[in-house]
Length: 106
Image 1 (cartoon, rainbow, N blue to C red):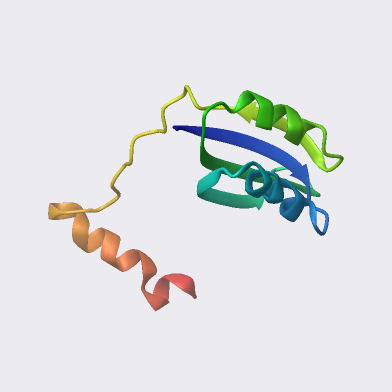
Image 2 (image 1 turned 90 degrees about the vertical axis):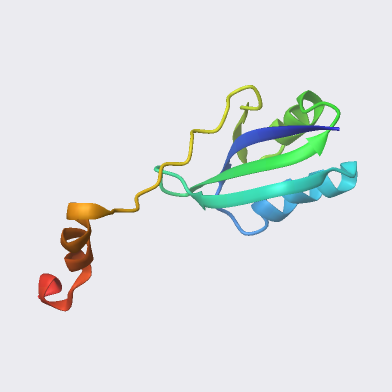
C-alpha cells in the first residue's frame, strides 16, 4: 500500500475529529501519523493525517461529505519540507544560552 497525506479543515465541534478518524478505521486504513491543531480561523481545526491505502481519492471524497469537514486537500505528491536544525555552536552558543535566562524575562 502507498502512503498518502491529507490536510483537512474541520469545524472545532465535539465529535468532529472522532467521526473523521472513524472513517479511516471503517476502511481498514492504518494511520501513520495524525496531527490536529487550531487553524488560523476561530472555530476551525486543521488535521494533517498520513495513512496507508491503495488510493486516497475515494477517502477524500467521503470526508468532504461530512458536515463538519470544510475542506480536504491531498498533499501526497508534495514532499515534506526538510528538517532544519536550530542547534548553535561556536561563537553563537553563549549568546543562545542566555536567551532563556531569568533576567531576560523580568
